[in-house]
Length: 620
Ligand SMILES: Nc1nc2c(c(=O)[nH]1)N[C@H]1C(S)=C(S)[C@@H](COP(=O)(O)OP(=O)(O)OC[C@H]3O[C@@H](n4cnc5c(=O)[nH]c(N)nc54)[C@H](O)[C@@H]3O)O[C@H]1N2
Ligand SMILES: Nc1nc2c(c(=O)[nH]1)N[C@H]1C(S)=C(S)[C@@H](COP(=O)(O)OP(=O)(O)OC[C@H]3O[C@@H](n4cnc5c(=O)[nH]c(N)nc54)[C@H](O)[C@@H]3O)O[C@H]1N2
Ligand SMILES: [Mo]
Image: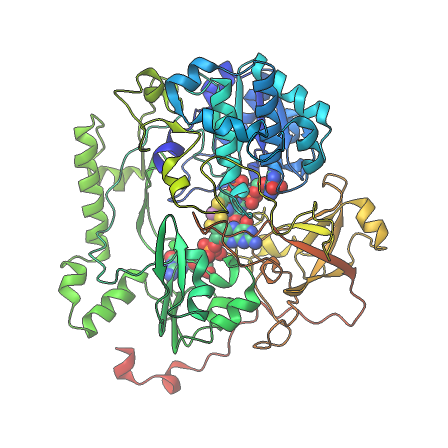
């Protein structure tokens, strides 16, 4: 996955060669601010601006117009959320029935097209996946879908699929269907053509960057072999001994007694937080490392206060960004907090395992070790990194960019025998025997349209607004929601929710109102923004407002602050990947007329003076 992401066709290749850029879920610049491991230099805005200046036509297929920056003057196809597979199949059908597909590419670089085709043509299920059919599902005019297919075949086209499209029922399918369309167009491996997974999902996607495989802190061997896909945590806690399927395997949920959580906030990221609250009662003890008094800390028995990245010397260094930064702490550690490494070393010491855990190295020594071993590896790849003292003095180093523009699957397309893919066939699999062999009814052997469990096309649905809970503009997930930047975005202290004027009028809403969003899983309060840049029938509420139940511990209690995950469903994408499906979520909205409860999400705990709460021995 990361090899594919780090070889996304780079923006320079797009700017020089692409003529048409079709983006499912847009190219949201808000997301390109970050990168795991840090960002040395932001490249997304300048890249998309140059692409616009180069005259590239952009198509934004998304319920939200703002997913594409105004500078590109994109055509906006405001499709129903969750209908992308149908649109893509409609495009594939048009390409095939008009002879616009690249037979040579399909033969050389893919397997299984002949087994996907009968499905596309309706021979297996009696449903032709033509543009009329796709129109009925997506709400886009059939003519637009057909025209788009013809345009894509007539010029150098890049397809982008936002990562958000995984976070829905059957979220594996949009990527596979888009890959099928890209393969049919035959432009994969060509400059500025083919497919990219999520331009601007992070800063690194599309960066023309030199990248190094950095050494990581050794993690030892975990004696525990049980595992779960992370999105199945409530299932696991609620069903010890129960079985689940994942990627062709059947496994058993362990019986968990202790939860130890360091990094990540399940009361932010997990779906159906009420179910999560219930599941959280199962373990005997919950221990967390946190630097903020958020919902995770409030739901823990023991909170070990840890440092923020601003309080420690470190290396900002990842195989995704070309910049290596020697980070120096901005502030001394506050109060009794410690670095995660110190906390864990301290625990290892009490367990008489300190030497095995630390291998005799302090955090500072590890940083030097990681840097030096990476530098050694880089040297073998012909990259001369400065020595440790020099980077500490200079502050940073940039890995040189490759001379040739990066192009997805370039080597494979030059010589598929010499550079096979890691699939069984070594090729792009439009029908996958392995997946087919799992016999899953929720993930067939080829890309396919399956109706999501909740979506606007469900005629019998009880709630008629589709909730998109995408990534927030003013923070990273839930982090620093208590900071001034995030707080200034709130309306009456609540997280803002965007609704189309038509839907707002039906409910008698005006901008600035506080509303209750609800469904059978939960309810939350949010502030209203009315905007015609969102598709009618869809509302948008970013993730990350700190969970703030009106009656803590009472299941289904109203979240006073606007965390969308009290509304989302806790179900896997399919038995294949078991990913989360936050975006398959229907809700209702009504004006909130009761007295507004105070938002208490950011209230700190009462802290006893250290003298009375801890003996010297414990503190030592
Ligand atoms: N500012 C900021 N940046 C971030 C993050 C953050 O929290 N804050 N998080 C980072 C992380 S971890 C990740 S994974 C990436 C995520 O990157 P993305 O997945 O790109 O993020 P989202 O903003 O959730 O989704 C992009 C857009 O997809 C659209 N969308 C949703 N459902 C559908 C659908 O069914 N069909 C179509 N066509 N469009 C749909 C939504 O309108 C949404 O705005 O962002 C990263 N960048
Ligand atoms: N509804 C909905 N839900 C979603 C998504 C969505 O689009 N919609 N997106 C999903 C996605 S893509 C993602 S990646 C997840 C993100 O979910 P998470 O990664 O769980 O979210 P964060 O808020 O970033 O949680 C990070 C936590 O780690 C703490 N922390 C920060 N630095 C340190 C440190 O150095 N040490 C320790 N010990 N702790 C630290 C922070 O205080 C914070 O509480 O959310 C997922 N959930
Ligand atoms: Mo993510």
